[in-house]
Length: 585
Ligand code: ATP
Ligand code: MG
Image (tube, rainbow, N blue to C red; front, side):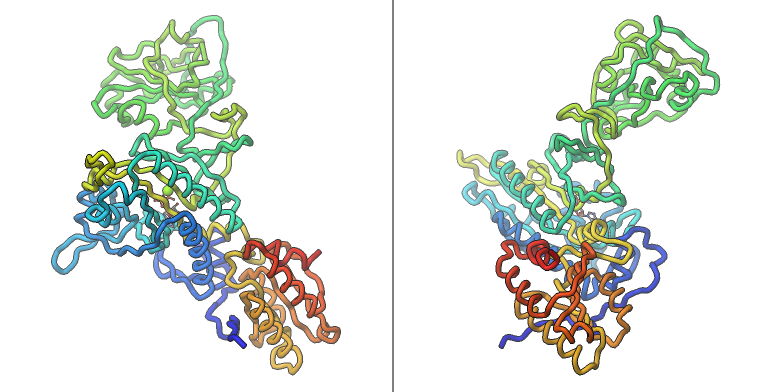
């Protein structure tokens, strides 16, 4: 008979806390601490206790299976990286204080890797030489370091965390696109296998313009990211999505200059005129990278997206009050009529549909209503400038967008030749020419995902793990321990279930039933089997499904039969419904 492995609560190192930890603001942080999955070592630095390590391993394995499934090969790179490589890519200077830097005893610079583009590019540049060896995808599951300015929410934003990072190398764009699509599909399956309610969203490629990227967001009220999404399937990070605002027109017969004493903000202007903020136009003045004066106009009810502004204007830094005075501009009453000649005027595309604007009059305490576009003033350029918000039109279908919040669990990215060019990583193409690799990079936040799962799967009693990532599938709970009937029956059941292939825990502690129930709900085993004296008299046990709270009495042999049957027939090992659903019908 094969040996079976049963997790014994009497031996398990899983100290639980009765009270909520003081600094834990959100469910995942609170519950992972309380249920004994993690402990804090320092700000943003955590230890995984046995239960936490089990869940982490489950998440890692799902990710590993999906990576292996699309032909990526696992490697392990060092966390300690030579500073030289970061000087080569230019990121030693660009990355800023998030990069954890250190100096060794020989005075050589090193960093603790926040990501591994430099290291992998240097790894392949001397040995991956021919187009015949491409494409190539390599990945690792490893600890990352980022000295986050505000580590918080436990595993969601930490300074030391676990990431799966994959990198791909290609001879041409078509090949890069194919791997990018494969990775995206794998990332979707990873979320599905862990029962995450998620959306792939358009994301901002940051300073590296022109690149393609997508973030996978687990929907959660506690998420740091703001999203917009549409019934048609389009979704974007609000920082990135195209903004199609719906400004409203305040119609007056002709342009009129009106005194607006003490009006400095859009809210004050809208209130003063008794019109919605969407009928006003907001102005922002700045300089581009060449030092040229740029004035931007956006719908009054929207915010400027600084990345978009910089892209449209060739860099954009807001003017200081003194600089504004130097140009004769008036803070709080800027407008397009009578701007300095040298100003380059860029306006949000959605304002193109507004023939008459409510704007500042470039004079303290005055505004214009009915300023006519093309007659009273001109716009030099139209661009996408604003942060998209709920209620804006969907760029794909035109319906109003809805808002949501999300946790970025993963991101896929087409890097192009940014790193290969900077670091001289090239291959011999089919025509004999030497060309830089095209690269992609793809990251899954493994430890952040553990927290995201808890954010979506918890209630007032604790965690309710999806079966695929639970620290064990079933917990057998003998109500009395040391009893000559209940405990042996519970032990036998646990062994039987383990032999069927289930991961089994047994709460063999000499604790009151109430304590065991509370801990089982807190820890979140998907299925609880409660063995008590009264039930046993009729050869029955009680089962409870954590995710639904459903419970029932069931004859012992019916339980093992049903589980043996569903285990044999469960096509996707890990699907909770296929395993436990039938038990409760
Ligand atoms: P964020 O915008 O949340 O700071 P990022 O976009 O900088 O994240 P990436 O460089 O895309 O992160 O890293 C890949 C993945 O690593 C992220 O999708 C996320 O799941 C995870 N991750 C990034 N930073 C952290 C962190 N401080 N703590 C935990 N996980 C993180
Ligand atoms: Mg990211």
